[in-house]
Length: 68
Image (tube, rainbow, N blue to C red; front, top):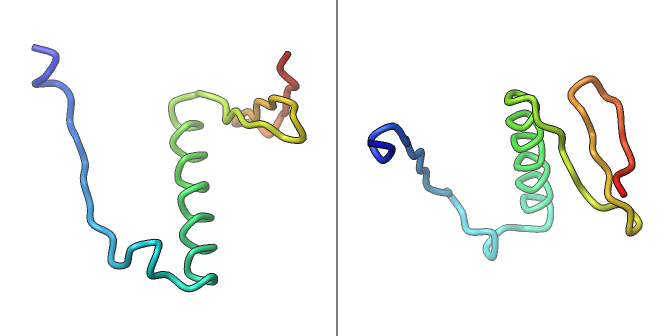
C-alpha cells in the first residue's frame, strides 16, 4: 500500500516564533530557507520564487531563469 511507503518526520521547536527575538527569528527563517533550497536541489528541482513581480527559477547549477 502507498500508505506504508510514506514516511513522516516530525520534530518539535525549542521556542515558538512568537517568543523569538528579532535576531532569533531572522536566523530561524534563514535556516529554513537554506534547508528548503538544499532539499529541492537534492531532488533536482528548481527553487521558484517571485522577485519584483517576476517569477524566477533558480537551478542547482546556479543558473537563473525568468518564467513567463
